[in-house]
Figure 1 (cartoon, rainbow, N blue to C red):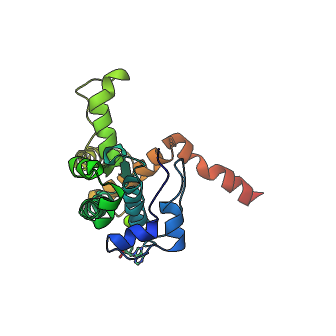
Figure 2 (cartoon, rainbow, N blue to C red):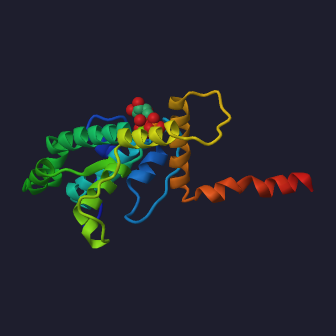
Length: 207
Ligand SMILES: Nc1ncnc2c1ncn2[C@@H]1O[C@H](COP(=O)(O)OP(=O)(O)OP(=O)(O)O)[C@@H](O)[C@H]1O
Ligand SMILES: [Mg+2]
């Protein structure tokens, strides 16, 4: 690995981007290795991630196709893809890259390969399809799409014959079921555990 040669600030200038803040620059130029960045909504996270990728590529620290970007929502994946793509294209045509890479080898690699950016869900689906046999799971197994998931949940709600004390309609109950099941899965919590979760608090209140 060669030592970094271009700063985040100079790279932004060369690509016609607004300069990163000091905090953003620290993230963009961080040494390789695990790192957690916590930032609020609209704080410039996507911008920083895109700049990080381009900085790593411009400095020859990673090849574009070695980058994997994962997001929760498809919208975020699209935004990240678009920003990385636009910046890498600008980098490929920039005078800065001609200085950094007189042979043109890096330029050719930037134009010839792309980082992979997708949602966790889509990426996991692809991993299952490609490598599921190693687990092993049936090669024909697929992840439910959001629509299919909704249909399954709606079937459960519509055919529920137990007591349900609510004024909400089946569509709205289905949405609630999906939200709850999503939260349970994300926190690795089984329904029974959730069912009893209030007991401890209740005991505390009563004592
Ligand atoms: N250093 C900067 N200078 C000027 N504008 C910036 C800078 N960093 C980010 N922005 C702008 O701030 C806005 C929000 O940035 P960005 O989309 O990266 O934030 P985010 O944290 O990913 O937001 P969200 O929470 O919506 O995903 C964008 O319009 C972006 O161009
Ligand atoms: Mg974002």
